[in-house]
Image (cartoon, rainbow over all chains, first blue to last red; front, side):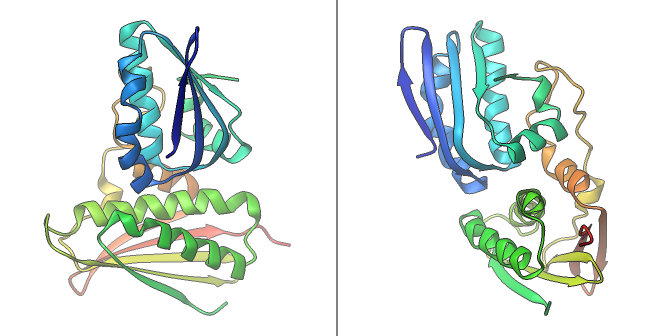
Length: 100
Length: 139
């Protein structure tokens, strides 16, 4: 399980952990359904334990971001490591998300 | 460093085997730790493309990955016996687009080009051959 979701008063708090490679991202499409349903809220993705992200993983993040954009919610990404930050910058994702 | 080689089926569930392979190649090649994730990313993208596009749906096919270090240059050669498919001719992602305009796809080959120093495709003996090179930092 990559996306571990908890609901709180402000919205959704998600612990994203492990290797989000292509097969994991395919499985995670189901995992993020509750997030898509709550795309009108604030969704915090805490990526402290995220070790790796492939383009398939980035696509998932983008899907979520687009949904919150349409529904009036927000995606906040926290605690990405230096390597993943490099990937975000390389792909322009750094500018698409609120990153803390 | 001797040549490393792995053969995978066109099954994305085998991607973790590819990751182990790339990690091993990097360890043997003395690749800087800061480069290992990027290399994993580029190689995963290139191999996933083959797994998804090279062979007709429902058929089994192989993807071969060879790797070696030579004179400060790390080379990966990804080959397959599928239909002619040149990933370097895919549409380039526009990374300046905002959220609404940004298409979901198109990142894979973009990342390969960003990360690798050389990307070359050729069709040879009925095989797709993709050569990816990265200059390693000198000691």
